[in-house]
Image (tube, rainbow, N blue to C red; front, side):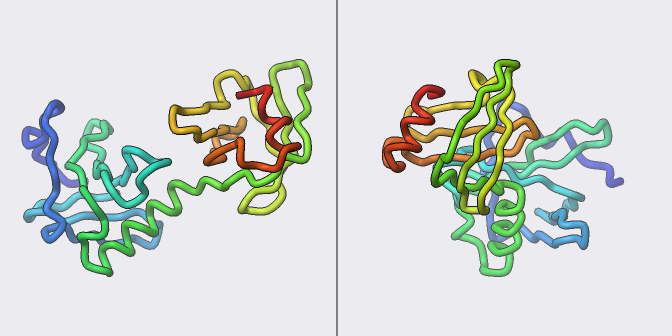
Length: 177
């Protein structure tokens, strides 16, 4: 593993990365390596800082140091400022990492009275049967009206505006929002 100069990374400092200096390469495993200003980083992680709002802006780039701690290298303001090859590498990585199907129709929601909800739903990934543990924590309606649902396996689903779903689906969800 590389020896990283961690003294260059201050916790309270925002570093905007120069997209012209970023050079990502994709490994067969799907991970990305990065070369930036002559420094090389293995298996970097890209994180959307506002995942449900802006898919191409404010992307955090980080790596694990020798103590297995994640260290942020900096922020990419906008993927659209990158050349096409680099943008595609980053966009593909983010698409894989943030695979979040849209809930389009709710056929039923069943409560087993033991902490789980079982949702039979249509999604953009097909019909799914979703088990949600502790719905109070795993159903989140944010200030912009976006509902996110996290299932028992940690998979996320979302509804941009639940009130715009068909009336039956909305009534089934309304109790849990």
